[in-house]
Image 1 (cartoon, helix red, strand yellow):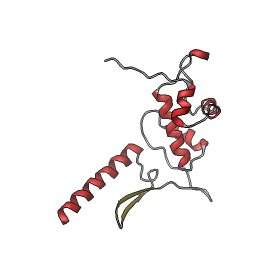
Image 2 (cartoon, one colour):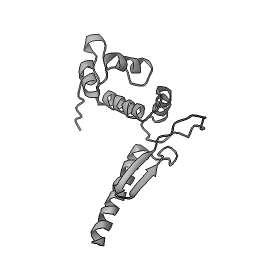
Image 3 (cartoon, helix red, strand yellow):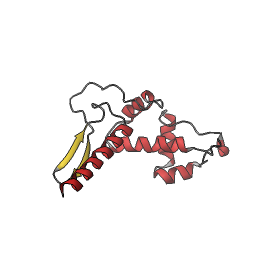
Image 4 (cartoon, one colour):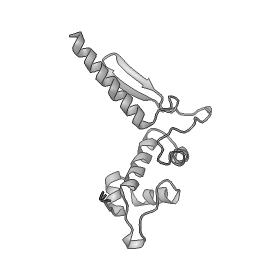
Length: 140
């Protein structure tokens, strides 16, 4: 099986993620993103680097600190397992997923407490949407 890895420069990676070079380098320095493949002018970035940066962006937008993101990345070494819950602290922020099914019907899930990976949450929401669509057709 021949797998082709897309090689990207730092500029291309920054354009795709809408991050600046300084931020990407900081994430690499902090161990949030793998070091580039190769050195100096020959260094390049793969799909893995792109996925890491997009994951960090997603979690940052959800309100997670870089410290917590680093914990999550260390825990999830490709196993797609949700890490154990951290004890709640006064003033702590929780991330909830709100899935709008139809008017008047919404599901609120806290994936971390439900022990659901992003893939499991996505699959669950798709199944619920399919069930709601089938029910809507039958009710007519």
